Image (tube, rainbow, N blue to C red; front, side, top):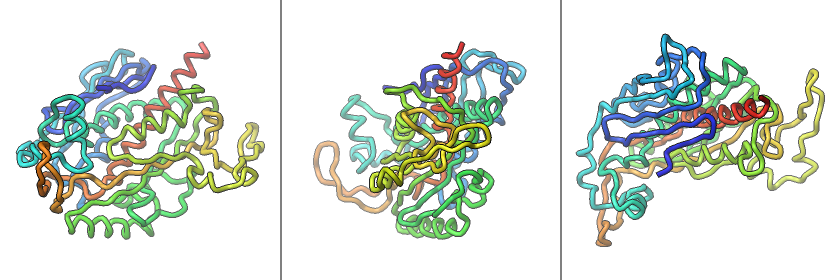
Length: 360
């Protein structure tokens, strides 16, 4: 199983949804950076379950412990071990579903591939696995912000057919995003999105949406053509998040409907540096950052586990009706916001270290 991400900044994650703990080993963190649990906990608190009526009622503090790689609050340059205990485990919720692969979940494919699977909660396919990504991403983000002034902000861009509308990529910040539990960057649409999620939840169903993310103050030059282009690594990172179904950067699919003369980003002088008048490229040209904000969008499907009765089949092929048990989000996108930010930070951190290594 592939549980390692990155080249110079490498993250190895471990743990299943209902095992004693989940966590990560982070290798490649530069020595001499101040780091404590609270630096990581802020993002974990934004990801954790039970934040509001919009999320799963599973009660987890998701308190992180730094096991290694830090002494007296300073990174040593050695691997950093991170662990978060699973406190509110209920594997018994899944006993009745042991013989029925949940529709659109990973039960069947894991069983076919490995000949065995975690008996409860989806195991490694569960969104609980993303705790490790967020913890590691918080470390990368701290380095990027302190050493290079990089800002990474994500928000809920849509829920179902409801869209956030135009967002100022230069000004949006996390305080604005977190002002409402739905984490929509537009206050005028946040409550409508929350109401839609509540309606879907009351019907024991689920709904999908999209998350948009902007990365500001990136230096030009990040990206490793031809196979490790910046947008290619971002796509890899985002599509590895559970429940993702689409990725687009800059103008994305809408750009395919434009003429080249309208889509091109003309160069202009921006106070002593070359920049672009528009940013349909999403801050990336030829697979390399050009100094403009990098922005992209990630699509999330509706959570697969719903309590509505569904006609399906057991592992032996016999017909069955599944009424899934357990505690699940009716819409994953509000809690996916810090996960998207963290995966972006991992990509940018790795590419930045690769660029710095090249200059030595």
